Amino acid sequence: MAVLLAVTVMSVMVVAVSALVRSGISSQRVETKILATRYALLSGLEGAEALILSTPPEERVFLDATAETINVGNGVQLNVSIRDAAGLADINRSDLALIEALLAENLDPAAAEDIAGRIASLREQAAAGKDQGTGTTAADGPVQKVSNGPKAPVVFQAVEQLLAMTEPEAAQPLAAYLTVYNPTGLLNPLAAPEEVLAAVPGMTGADLRLIKGVRKSRAWEADMGFKSLLERLKPFLAVAPPSIFVIEVEVQDGQGLIRQSNVGAMIQLNVDGPQPFRTLWISEL
Image 1 (cartoon, rainbow, N blue to C red):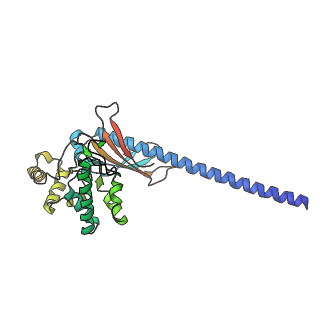
Image 2: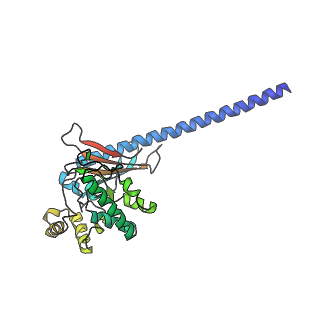
Image 3: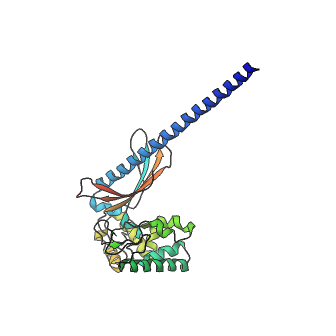
């Protein structure tokens, strides 16, 4: 009986140890895959920066998040998209009529009007130098300054603060159209999503077709119709050399990587600094 008991105990111990070893090996493989994916995504961000630098300055105004596949070696393929941050509406700087129109595309008109009113109130209080706590700073205190744009009291530190005011199902589509990093708050129509352009007060179907044609011809400076459009909608639109870019990187293919893993970042062109770019924001890898 004692021998049988000892054999049983030893058998159980062997099975338990084997299970622990297999579990450890499996966890190590997962960790290795996660780490490899992380470095692949970081390589993608650096590849995106290289693409920006290789794009002639006059062509950067057309960076509109069109996806491009890059190979970073060892069969690793990544989808990279780059957008001029001025292609997105800035919840701190853009005209409130534009913000309200974008909200109305995803919320009922009453809710959009209410949120726009709250934003207006927060902007007024921030400009008056009243500290409102979450996301609001005094006018003579810390301010958010990006690129060469005007200083503005920070009403929102992140888009998520505004999205928290909306209905949950509206948050995801709105997040793709808003930012806090547009240097002037004016939209670059050559880089903006069509949904954002359609929300610009006074924008017509003919205007949208004109913008689409200019994007294709790449001759915006010589197009008098486009220049007239910029003048007519100058409270909302402007074309200026980009300084801040939105980058999205996604794993398309690669052995030992987690496919469809992605990372987003906001980077600023830093021509006068020791490095060509500085990172303003990056999503968790």
